[in-house]
Image 1 (cartoon, helix red, strand yellow):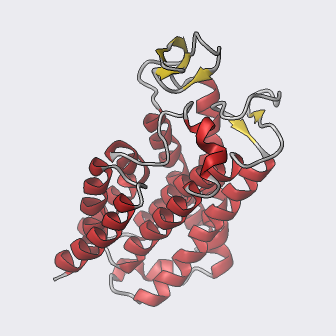
Image 2 (spheres, rainbow, N blue to C red; image 1 turned 135 degrees about the vertical axis):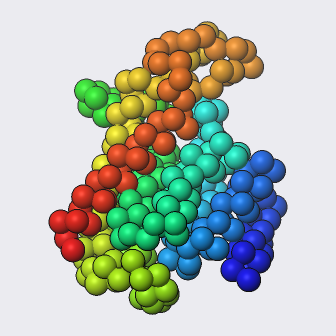
Length: 276
């Protein structure tokens, strides 16, 4: 029954996102599979955190979208997420959910919150940072960089990242009490106070977002547009093919997201050990 409920809920949400053009067809299929696993292998704690990230990120991606339209031309991923981006954002959490179902342990829950706090922080930073009236600065040398530059950060985007990550931590506290001790191993997480969850989510998520920016500014594969001269994440810009500019060939945007999420997961894991 849990598989059926999970599939129906995921299908409803992914279908609405596809209709609103927040997901591509491949992204919608991946979201249905992922949502089903989150609910059936986990419970509302796992599923609810995933939906919170997805819904808020989808809403913010549409916020004053016309102003961010030009910036998105430089990004490897636009506001309409495909299967690769869906898996890069929620795949680690799904693995943690499955591992917890097979070998129940509170550390999987902490790791999960860290990964989801990181992708939430990164997404919120990108969406809100794109609305900043002040130009971003490089996370490496703090010099002003053009809007849309990978590794560029702004005060508005950084604040959004911290708030988004903290909200994921707070939501963990709420959902754990809502679901109760449906899995015996989660009892240790239920005893964690609200402020501690906010710290776990906020610190790990913000650190993950900063790691994402650092990787983006240093080793992520980037390209140069020979028409406008911009350094971009895409292989085509201004209607023409771009040329390699810097970075490691395998370090794509999705790889950056994955690595920073792993780092955030381990930070949350460590904080969970300290604060419990």
